[in-house]
Image 1 (cartoon, rainbow, N blue to C red):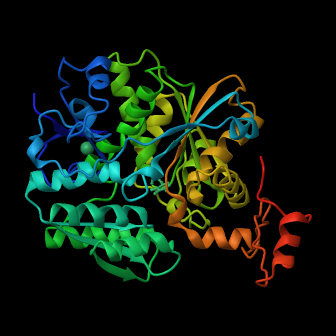
Image 2: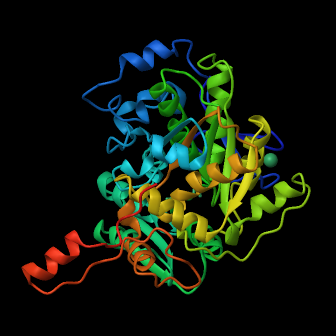
Amino acid sequence: MPSKLVCMDCGREYPINAVIYTCAHCASLLDVQHDFPQTVSRELFDQRLGALDLPYSSGVWRYKELIYPDLDEGLIVSRNEGNTNLYHIPKLAAWAGVDTLYLKHEGENPTGSFKDRGMTTGVTQARVLGMDRVACASTGNTSASLAAYAAHAGMEGIVFFQNKQIALGKLAQAIAYGATCVQINADFDKNLELVREVSEALAIYVLNSVNAFRLEGQKSIMFEAIQQLRWQVPDWIVVPGGNLGNSSAFGKGLHEMHALGLIDRLPRIAIIQAEGANPLYKAYQTGFEVYEPVKADTIATAVKIGNPVSYAKAVRTIKWTNGVVEQVSDQEIMDAKALIDATGIGCEPASACSLAGTRKLVEMGVIQPGESVVGILTGHVLKDPDAIIKYHSATLDNLDATYANPMHPAEPSIEEITRILTGAREKAPVV
Ligand SMILES: *Cc1c(COP(=O)(O)O)cnc(C)c1O
Ligand SMILES: [Zn+2]
């Protein structure tokens, strides 16, 4: 049977080549549903490790049978995304309070965030549909990724930015990759409404994570992490939550792996939100009885979202995996980030929710010290240089530079430099 789009609530079905984002009947989110081939196995995917050519050299398309089985390979738009490292850093594990902590660094994707995994499938679907213009509203990384993949595919990329609080690295990427950048005096949530309306009128394909094909690519983070663990399932996956596309994709991917017998149990998913952008956390506190959007404010701009589009799918993820939702403060985020950065690995602020959240859940007794944890680092350290410089120079409003690595200004004098390098001085943070 060919793949199709299925409403997650009323079950209505739509053909895979319909340009539709939400159910025409009940307005709920759609899932891409595949008829997985019988040939799917751990061995099949292991054989493809080390492939030199696309599609199997990509960390998304290696799992093509799970991503988009009957897709014509010639339509794939890929930049060899995925294949990101899974780091084992005992010092950070000790700081978080667990024996085994891996950090999977999605900032190592071609444009520096996990968004590339969803963009390869999203732009590929644009090609399937014969659309030549793609658009998104973004807090930054989706635009950077869309701009790159649209350019790579020879399409026009269109991005709707808010006119303030965009991390510099992300804005620079979208401009550099040649996207049409529309700067709007509105926040992300408003821009998402606008992009959906304008795109409908102008026949532009929307590649925000409301687009179910994005999530199909992002599922591969779970496939790849578990394959890297030799198919051993960790006890916990800890992931930052903003618009909740990623956590939704994780739940779907794990559910599918389990149904196919690729794994014998499900890890528990912990979604970590910033305190200033915590609508899922608040709903979780009510047992998901009450959901209210919030006015979002956090230094972690990638998760600064008050009304997450994939809310319902994230709730499903939590239910499927016996998961939890926690929140962390901007101070906790920036301190955890400083420690990740100081290991030489580095990440952008939102990513540090994973480490800060793990530590908090251990303190609360939710994660046991003997349990294994995979934390997802969602974006690259260079995405938000501003936050780094301000943290280390102790100039962030209302935040302490707990683990500051301050600069040492010096005259071009051997004596003065020697004094700095031999005297008592503030050193980079050590965990
Ligand atoms: C998009 C993004 C997030 C949030 O992911 P959602 O799928 O929107 O929940 C977190 N961190 C980074 C770096 C991102 O780019
Ligand atoms: Zn429906």
